[in-house]
Amino acid sequence: MKAAFIENTGPATNIKVGSADVPRIQPQQVLVRTGAVAVNPIDTYVRSGNVKLELPPRYIVGCDFSGTVEAVGTDVSGFSTGQRVWGSNQGLFGRQGTFAEYAAIDECWLYPTPNGICDEDAAAGALTGITAHLGLHLHGGLQTGEVVFVNGGTGGVGSAVVQLAKAAGATVITTVGSEQKRQTAIELGADHVINYREEDVATRLSKLVTEQQPINLWFETLRTPNPDATIPLLAKRGRYVLMAGRDARPEFPVGPFYVNDLRAIGFAMFNASAREQRLAADNLNSLMADAKLRPLIGKRYSLDDTAAAHQLQEENTLTGAGTLSGKIVLTP
Image (tube, rainbow, N blue to C red; front, side, top):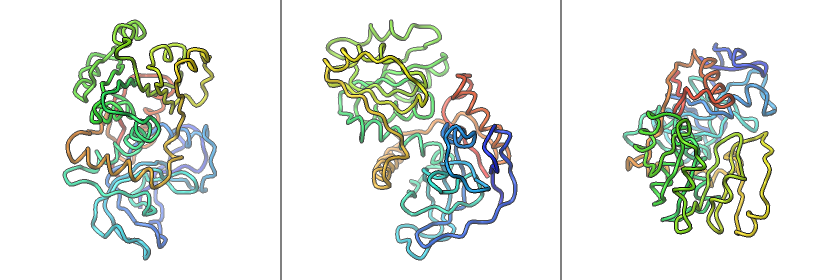
């Protein structure tokens, strides 16, 4: 089979596309013929070596996938040959990645693809959708009628947060970097959209946020969070959800934080149990089937262009190039 892999961590140019053996499934695994895969920032961190993991000598990159069941292991009971499926959480903790024509996936990380949802959309919404759902619901305890703020409403996670929060009955405020992205964020369901290239975000938020309608849940997607700006805008018992900024060391205003009974919640999607991720995936499937969740795809490549896809993701994640909305999807 064709696969995109590395033999040494380093720059995107280390990625090779070549021949690899079709994986042999274990009793608890499903062999998936991949229809689409998607790039995430974590993929670039693992490939570069910035996140240090024990990797196989020939490590296939990638976390997300969608496709069709080709074969099932003897202990698999929930899936059958020919069924369309999607998932994430691969390429970590000793598991091989997904950027290949076939992938062997433990049944516990596999979910059925709803009718009418194409492979590209299923792959694009995998990690980002589960991340957004865990942050809003499992960790953030979002309630109907609350106010949610998320930076980057047309990014991979940000666009999912906008849609999931709106589907849960929240008022959604977000930021974007262009007029085109502003229109996209409105189409996704955002109630208030701030173009940070034309407006001062803090000034606009100070006008939107009132004592009667403060921000209940701040979903931080930036690599450089600013608690000094965030905490004064949160409601009493508001939640500050952090899932980015691995190397950030911002100053923290302890006084305003504790006198308002605030909560700071850090989480990584990969720490969630298989059961917790499945509960999120089940809800995502319902929302996709009801056309309330539309994964945002910003760029499409073939598997041969994996290195270019990684480079584009890295430029937007690490240097803020602003040349990408949504997810990068590849087809093998």
